[in-house]
Length: 155
Image (cartoon, rainbow, N blue to C red):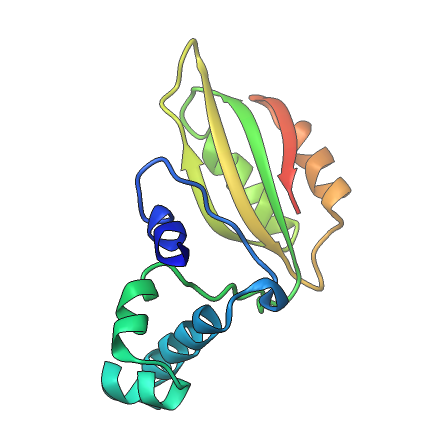
């Protein structure tokens, strides 16, 4: 049953979950440990990593692609915004420059194909210690020429 549940994670259209370690079955914790051992170089082979983690290779291979450790170790807080901006040359550049001036570090940008003269842009950023507050950042972005709407979608 557990195998079927984990393999479902790999199927197209399936959902992903972040699960607290205390709710994970022991085998999945050990697979995560084996992955960590391999990526850190402490184990050179799958056989060595599985043995060090206390699981069989077959268990490792069943779940290796379905278990990923969540790392929340970036300094500063995270902020994700979605902006609707005018589809004109330089608008996105101005937006990104404003974010940089506020002291945020841009992690990801996704811009949809513009429709009706408007492009939707999703930006995830790291708010560093010396960065302006998220509210100040949003206010500065909102006041930029060509920015039609700004929404915070994640923190």
